[in-house]
Amino acid sequence: MAASQSPPAPDPTTAPPSVQQSLGLDFGASPSAQPTVSPDTADPVSGADAIASAVSDHNVTIGRVIEQLDAFGFSVGDTRFSLWTALVVTLVIVGLVFAARLGTRIARRVLTRVTRLDPSQGVLAEKIVQIIVWALAIFIGIDLLGIDLTALAVFSGAFGLAIGFGLQKTFGNLIAGIILLMDRSIKPGDVISVTDGAGNEGFGQIRKIGLRAISVVTRDRKEYLIPNENLMINQVENWSYSSRDVRVKAPVRVAYNCDIALVEELLLRATQQVPRVLENPAPKVLLMEFGEDAVTFELRFWISDPEEGMSNIRSDVLKRVWHIFKEHGIEIPYPQRDINLRGNAQFDQLLSAISQRSPPVDEGG
Image 1: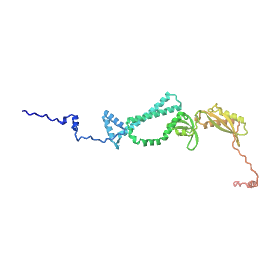
Image 2: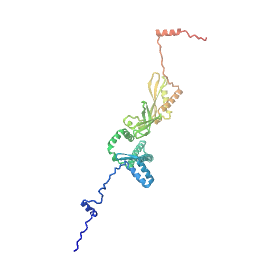
Image 3: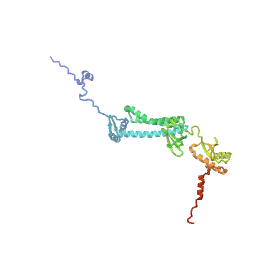
Image 4: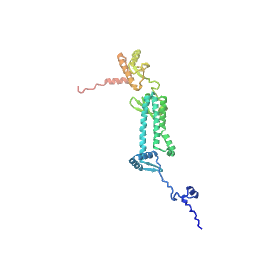
């Protein structure tokens, strides 16, 4: 009788994965093969790695140079800083600053040619466009560099607080400048009164309204930079806010023996002969006082170009008054004093002593 042969035992290594899992066996992996974790450091600017990979795929030589630049660096915790990262950040910042300035200039030219805005509206539009362009440049730079803003979450509170205190005046001047341009109380070309460090008051013309301050140029070609916030909280004397007409006063003194009516007529005639003096409102002559040695008149006339100077127009009028007074014999007095000497014993003795003095001897005679 033939002996029956038992079937061969199945090889557990050839069993399906499901069977192996049911048996608690895993022959697909070596017991000693454990996953190793490499302590990779994170690059704060992921855009630098993307640029390096893209350049290396196109040019091997430049890729090697980038690898050498990236080899020079240091690590702070889990963050690594390299020479390549610094180079990429510098190039992106320089490029964005150049692009933002170019975009601002182009926008300014477009606004000047396309729109018909008054000076204050034009400056306000330029400032808004400038803020938008720089904001876009910052966001584009963050996107290009791949900066992870969540990495700064720990320092965002302290950093924001420091920025708030440090830039408080800057943002205050920025908002003040926008408000001044919106309500048109101050605009380029206006003539305002300014005071220097010594307390001397003068006037100047506004040439430019910036994000931080306005530029005021005086007749001495001195340029004052006044913060916008000062113009919001302090009193400002604007000579051309609602009208550019400014009244100028010039005092004139004549002798008591002059004809008052003739003096008034000559003063008006002299004033009207100066080109910068306006005909409307008409000049006026007022008698101000009877002084100790003269009769004081005051010329009051109007001009429409105070930025061209106040002292020079007053000088032109007074020069014309001088010549026309000379032609008509009007006397301009100078201070006079009458001294009355009363006789007394001491004074008489002094006079007699002076008269009794012998004249000096002339040795040569």
